[in-house]
Every structure is written in structure tokens, then in C-alpha cells.
Length: 464
Image (cartoon, one colour):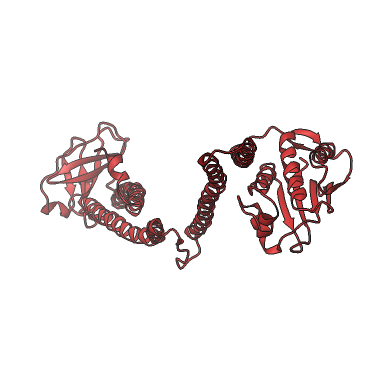
């Protein structure tokens, strides 16, 4: 198993902690390394500075006693003094030690390593079991035989400081990263606790779909917004499932009714011999129920086709007034005995819509108005431009409906009690009208003052 697969199996809080700890470790390591190198170089620069300062002090002392070029003259009466931790020697041109500070007494012998040039030179070398740095300064470069001043300091104090600093830095890095990872893991667990609550609630909802996700986490954050969004989504899905269940039940009922009637009619007809007229009447009854079933299936297919378009429309700019007038004329020819239709609309009202879709909207609204309006009643059709929309209204003086059921009129297969008593129908006409209007970004509304008070249906379609 590779590392990526192994990490992917860890919890989110663990992965966040690992990423946080790794990032912090890298950053701290880079910072500490830079700090350590800076301190290391600074201590060595300080050591070299002190070597030069010691050398300058010794030279000043020698000049004060006239022995800057001839250290032999000062060997007896003016011994060389050195600060603690500093080792000073006066050397002849041949490397012979002329004089040395008393600090050499407790140290092993130090070989002389004169430079080849006559310039001041720094040498780093091993003295006994430790490292040392020596500064060689010529005392008189004009003399044929150059005398040398040697100033030496041990580097062990620097190394002890650096070793101690390195240990504390490592402890600080390990301890700091470890503490940060523990705190980060606790914070991640606390921050992701709402996720666990959401997961548990979602699992419970599989067994009890009526529940909802929790939204009270003690704070208002992104997870609260996520839970509320999912609750809205779950609510819509629950409503959709309930509509689908009701749709399946209603569809089965509406198709089962004419099929049962057909089967009963055929059973009665075939039970005993009958006359020709009786057979014809039975066939007419079967045909009527077959037409009802065929109309229901056709409306179901139309509604499914409209909902399956998913925004893929092919609208054309058409004159809505002319199209509606044509459908009114066809309705009057098909139902000459029905209620009269009055047309109220301007000319040149255009919008982008498929002619077939507009025909379906007008035919269903006119069909409903004529079906539920008495023959002596009145149906009015209006087309107008309002606030950038094309508005189609169909008003009738028919059976009307209670205002509280206005929204339910657009549910599939829903029919009011008065509508069922007044005329046959499948309850899919208004859902088809709503689906077409919404597919173009429009809307459909209905209102009525009550039973026997007539009704108004309004369809709004955007002009653009």
C-alpha cells in the first residue's frame, strides 16, 4: 500500500493535523537552520574581532616600551600580558618563540605556523583536543627579518554555546511541533464535530425520511449554511418524492378506471347473445373509454417531453396576438354550442416562444374555460404587454374554485370536487401549461372569488 492510499484512509482531522504539523515542521526547521547559521557565523566573527583587538593592544604595549620591532629587548623587563582565554607569543623571523604569555603554562605545546606572506593572517588548527584560531601579525614589515605577534584563542567556548543552542533548538522544534499538532488535532476535531452530527443525522434519515439535519452548532459558520442548504434540498426532494408517489397512484387510478370500464363492458357484452344495436352501443362505450385512456396517455407523454427538455428550447419570434386569435377561431369551430369567447388584445405583440408550445397553452386554457363554463356563460381572452412580459389571460364565468386550492390546481391529476362533477378530465392540462411557462422563464397563476364565481388564469412569458 502506497503512502497516498494510506493517507486517504485517515480521518479528515488526522490529515489536517499531519499537514499542519508537516508544514510547521518545515517552516520552523528552515527558520532554526537560518538562525543557527547566523549565530554560528556571528560568534566566529566576534572571535576574529577579539583576536584583532588583542593583537592591537599588544602592539600598543610593545610600542610604548620601544620593542615593536625587536621583541627580544622586551623579553625580560616587560612580560606579555594576555586576557583570560587568550594566548600570546612573540616570534622571531625564524619561528623561534621569544616570549609568551603565562596562559601557555597549563596547555600543551603549540607548533608555530608562520604565514608565507608578511600580511596579517588567520589560521584555524587543532591544539590538543580542541580547535583554536591564531592571528599572526608582523611587527615590522620594513625590517629584513620580520618578527611576528601570535594571538590565539580556543574555539571550544563557541562550540559549547553552539552545541547547547542546537540542543535547545531541536527540543523547541520537536516540542513546539508536537504541542501544535495536539492543539491542532483538538481544534480540528472540534471544528469537524458538526460534520459528525450531520453524518449521524443523515444516517438516521435513511430509516426515517421525515427528519432533518441539525443546524444549531453553537456558532454561525459555513457548516450551518451547508446544513440549512441541505435541509432545503432534502425538503424539496421529500416533496418531489411525495409528488411522484401521488403521481404514480393517481396515474394508475386514472388509467385503471377506463380499463376496468372497458373490461366490464366487454364481459357483459360477451355473456349473452345480443342484437346488432346492442353490440354497436357496447363498442361505442368501449371506444369512449379508449379515447379517455388515449387522451390521458397523450397528455402524460406531452408533460414528460416538456419536462425532459431541460432548457433546450428552439423558440422563434411570433406574433402572439395573431396566434391566439387563430386558436380562438379553431375552438369556436370545434365547440359551436359552447360559451361565447370574447377577444381583447392588441396587435403586434411578439415574443420568443415555440408556436407548438403556445398552441398547447392556449388550447388547454380555452378547453378548461369552455368545459367548466355554462353554454350561456362568457369566456374572455386577453393578450397584453406588461413590464417587459407578454401576458395571456383567460377569464370565465364558470364554476370557479376556492382561493385556498389555487396552488393545487397545477398539481398532476388534481381536480376539485366541482370539476369532477361537472365534466370528465385527466387533471394534466394545467400542469402542462405550468411546465411550458416555466421552461421559458415565465409563470402561471390562477385566482377565483369562490365557487360559481368564475376564474382567471394568467400566463406570463418574458418578451426576451
